[in-house]
Image (cartoon, rainbow, N blue to C red; front, top):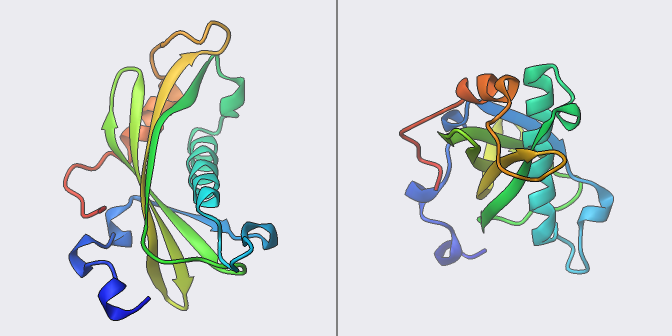
Length: 158
């Protein structure tokens, strides 16, 4: 990227704005023909980080709950390219904790020595539905309790 192509400094996410930083490695297969991580792979990093954090923070296999979180909306703004074997940290915060949905504010950071360099910002909306009927239901209490610990209001998440 040339200097003129760099994202504006004020719009870059700050790792300290995210209550959770979850490690996610890149994989050999993540690189596309152009030698960088393909755009759709960022979504896999984000989904992996959120669900791994939920399972860790609730001490529950979320796949076994009667209500499951389905992704109803996503967006991603790419700031810098990634390439295998980059080490990553995914920043996780809850922007909104509703009755039946959670809005996550996310960021992907590349580990460069002691620094975390922003590579992308993203937003995920999980809507909770009954496992069998797929009708909207309340967020399971274990997930609500965990998500409540990382709700943030004023953020510089891009």
